[in-house]
Image (tube, rainbow, N blue to C red):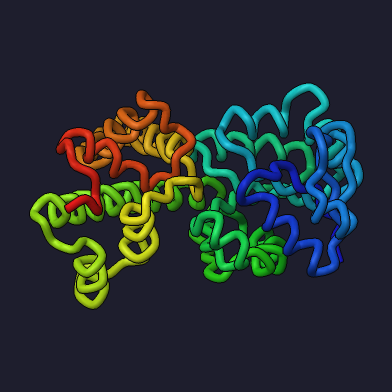
Amino acid sequence: MSKIGFIGLGIMGRPMAGHLLDAGHELTTVKRGTLDETLASKGMKELDNPKAVAEASEVVITMVPDTPDVEEVLFGEGGVIEGLKPGTLVIDMSSIAPLATQEFAKRIQDAGGEYVDAPVSGGEGGAINAALTIMVGASQEGFERANPLLEVMGKTITHIGEQGAGQTCKVANQIVVALTIEAVSEGLLFASKAGADVAKVRESLLGGLAQSKILDVHGERMINRTFDPGFKIKLHQKDLNLALEGARSLNLALPGTANAQQLFQACVAHGGGDWDHAGIARALEQLADHEIGNR
């Protein structure tokens, strides 16, 4: 069993940490208000800062919102690197910029640690059910060290390549997910505005080529008007920013991604940054002056 520091106990981080505790690992985290009662009851301990967490750990896992957050946890005042011991495994499971990831990996390795980027897909449900898809950028040695822990939290774990490759894969994932949610929104909105029973339309589509997990899960959200996250629009918006910034550096046009980003921006402008990303449907509904499910 490992001594693990887990920093980032949000919607997905909480259940991920819980699975590691259930597997018998010892976990510490940074004190941030009141520790979740379930995690506390399983033995999770709080320490003052990331440096202290690193000093107490063989493995440090970060699961925070954005690139600057990872940088602050790892390299800010009282950061992980100040308490890093030789051979410490640092696993970043956040979704952040691939180029920054490569820089972070070099700094951790220069300090004597091993760095793995392992962003995840599957949302809150995947985290709760330990069924996440995990995309790994690491050396072979780093992957072999991290994999037993990743298997506790995920179901599909793929070693994509060296550090940064996991984050590149995650950006690609977020492009596909955003455009598919938009496509489901447009299809259901069309059916609803045309007067069809949209629940039956979704049921029929689930039996054909249009079938997808997004049609299943998020299509139901759109019909039932359940937009509590899930995965927040403002976080998916951040991921599409990474995609578009990367596209500019590669001289690559991503018109569908840019359009989805504009729809997310419309949601944020209407106070929807914390809606589930299925809430992209609301931007399209406003343009149509029609709500999915109305007949």
